[in-house]
Image (cartoon, rainbow, N blue to C red; front, side, top):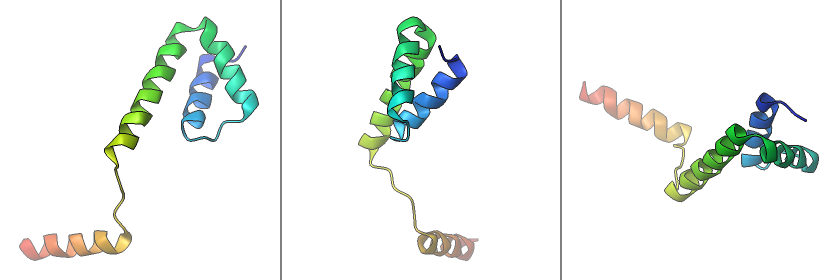
Length: 75
């Protein structure tokens, strides 16, 4: 069986669709016996869902520089 640290790592990888099938199976098996990791996994899924629902985006480098320029002009 994998350790809780490894389970957390796989859980995070799975959140970003980077975990292999074998890793996902190991995680599922670990979660059957470990309530702490089961709770962590559930909270991780909920957090991912909420971030997806929030429709967050990142400013482009050009937009960041423009924002910095405008802030400097105000001071």
